[in-house]
Amino acid sequence: MRTLTSALVILLAMVIAVPRVQAQVSHTASQSAIDAALQQHVSTVAADRADLLRVLGNPEVKAVAGKAGLDLRRATTAVASLEGQQLTELAAQARQVDQALAGGQSKIVISTTVIIIVLLVLILLIVAID
Image 1 (spheres, rainbow, N blue to C red):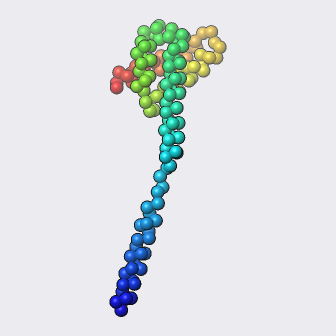
Image 2 (image 1 turned 90 degrees about the vertical axis):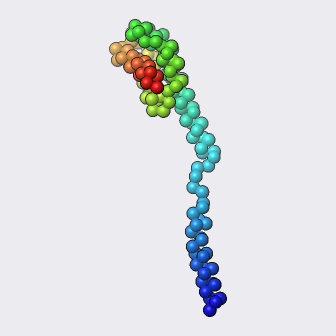
Image 3 (image 1 turned 45 degrees about the vertical axis):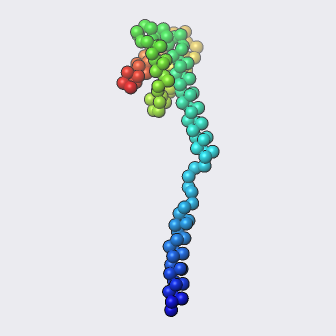
């Protein structure tokens, strides 16, 4: 009887231990997948900053900012401190401005002027708040 009890205890212990052993299987992403995702994020952030700086360096944008009395140097230095959703939204607006300016128009359309001013004011407000 003692052997039967020992066999049942061992069998019960194995039944209990098997799910725990299987639960230890790793379900995380591989290091290469993590590295690729980080590299993609860094590239996206760098491209967004480059788009903003390209638009801020445009002579027509400088003229509009000068007429509006906005400091482009401060806005340009503020681009380095932008992150996350703010950077993404401002970069999208900068791309719209860049497309409008690259359209071959000799005059800046009022909507483009408004976008430029809003873009500059948003950058300056974000820096002032932070």
